[in-house]
Length: 180
Picture 1: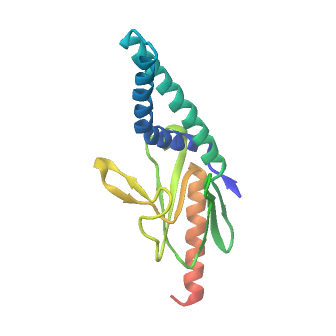
Picture 2 (picture 1 turned 180 degrees about the vertical axis):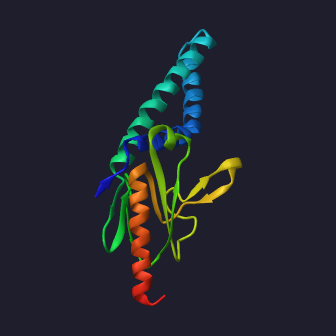
Picture 3 (picture 1 turned 120 degrees about the vertical axis):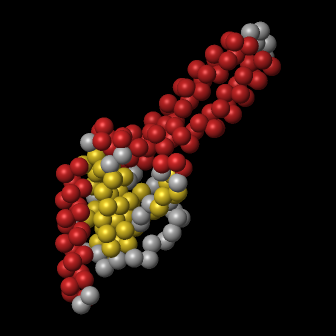
């Protein structure tokens, strides 16, 4: 099984920062109230303490999440199928046979271009909709975008082209063999 591109950790970091934002604001307000309850004289000192706690908490938790998510996302592209294994607490194992693959899309967002990787979307027949882990993504203007079943978030730029060529070749062979 293969790991993602090392720059892919930034995808998980950004995702973690976004997710933790609301939680940490609640914690910052809570710590402000605790500080005042136990004799904090200066409100400004409580605010500074809450902000420092907030930043420290977000950075530590985001880094732990990014490393664990990155290390637990594995994929393998072999002659029969594409295998994807992901998840920290709940593991998700996907096997995508080439008979179901319809298209391979490559996307490069701003973070991907900065760190030299691409996202590969392997679209299949009979995809399961918007469900699943990270199934809904938000694009420009907050639009809902679909994440394909064969979602590989951070692959080396050269590797994405090799994956696309290999998978498209397998699709053609599969359709030719089945008479389509």
